[in-house]
Length: 388
Image (cartoon, rainbow, N blue to C red):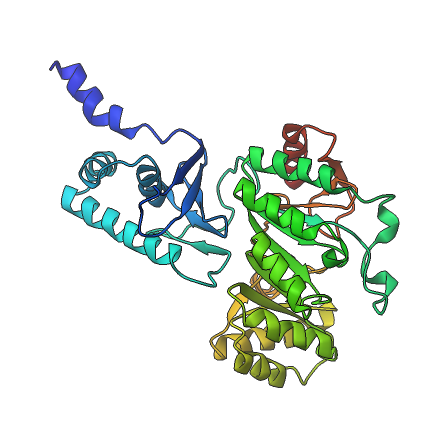
């Protein structure tokens, strides 16, 4: 081999990044357990791995390469050789890291009630730090209607003239999937008022998307209806809890009995009395909490509740949709430190109104396109322009 070929072999050939794109894997019929994987590789080599259309794993560059070799059915020996050459590490260490990754991934595949969004890497990257080919999530407001006993001001009905039908929403979901968006959350208004919600969840399952539901619990206390949503493939629920609504408590108890990940959202609207509420939720088995404040004047109470959540060993979720509020603990804490927020709106997620209009996020009224009628590339370019 010539000197040039040796240099090329050492420094060029094995440092080519994994080609960006979407890769899929289905376990063979004789496997001990059935599962499917979808891997989206970004331009910078990082990626997201979708497990059984129910969990989105954020991967750093090394973990993305391990996931790629799993999907390509690369042998452990060959994968270790490639990784050792690419990253200039000992082959035995690359082999051990690859086995460790496989072991952790298998544990996640077989874990019930798994968090819908998590991280699986050997170095955790900052959220939304790199260039992304598409958002990680689409928040779809199926309707701005609410139950009759809720305030008419709870959703901006005047913004839209009509609701998309089932066929039109399927077009949007397919367009999102083709763009590489793995995660759909159905919100509103109250999305369970849409009779076709189970059909949309089922369609997401067919595509391979992770699907979530943001609800006040209006219909989850109906056992047959909750079972229909679960059988359709619903992966997680965020229940916006009204502590004074007994039906919401019944819905929460019913959801916690099922094999589904549940987050409870609490809006802080007063200055005291909420810590006993956290104790009650913890005793019921709630493990994941989302918080927001109804007013900036309550930021001290919000931070106090954040510490109370941590003290009770509950997970604090801050980047799932919260109705019309950006007052969450992480944003307020970063503001106090004069640091830029971990801004996901317009990058990690976009918001679709009931008529298909796309916003950067809830509460930002500028329309950047209509996902039913406009090309995805045009909308994504406009979203990135709005955030620059």
